[in-house]
Length: 232
Image 1: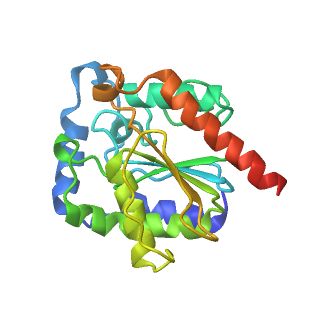
Image 2 (image 1 turned 180 degrees about the vertical axis):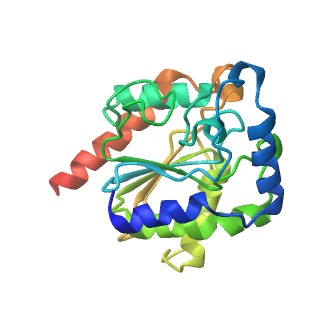
Image 3 (image 1 turned 45 degrees about the vertical axis):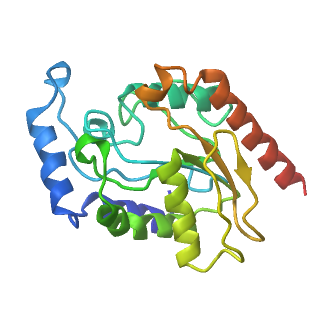
């Protein structure tokens, strides 16, 4: 991993800017879930993960209390991660369909995964102030990774990304974008194309709101876009 991105991730891991989140993530790491009593929980902010030269950035909401807060890797160790990484593997963005723990051999190809907030929040609901405190880390990732596409998983992720672009005055216009699974938006010259999808939470996948074929269709559209972009 290039040095600047590595240094950013080291900075993320040591962050203690949000007292509420620090208390919660560390309490979960001590108490643990019965099924994971033998685990030594990560219990710290979770850095981004993937190919540092990726052209696709995947933006989620936050680490799960007993998922990434346990394993220390984005979307790793819970059902949402099982769903996402299987889809990424089948779309050619990952070298294996499973993500169990750090060091399990998983590598991403041309994709990098991050989140709007890096600590597990109570009830999976970060406060607006906490999202704002975490935003500089995301802004730095946008600077360091040579992106051509962004996939926002869920409406909060989409809104967070748009807010960043507006605050940076990188949008030549301020479109009123609607969150709709499968939609994609051209945000203007020199900006990555924005794709949106439902978040692969259990609430969405267990109810059928998000199916494997629905996510596969979005990833296929992204791959097609990136291939055409390279050819130009």
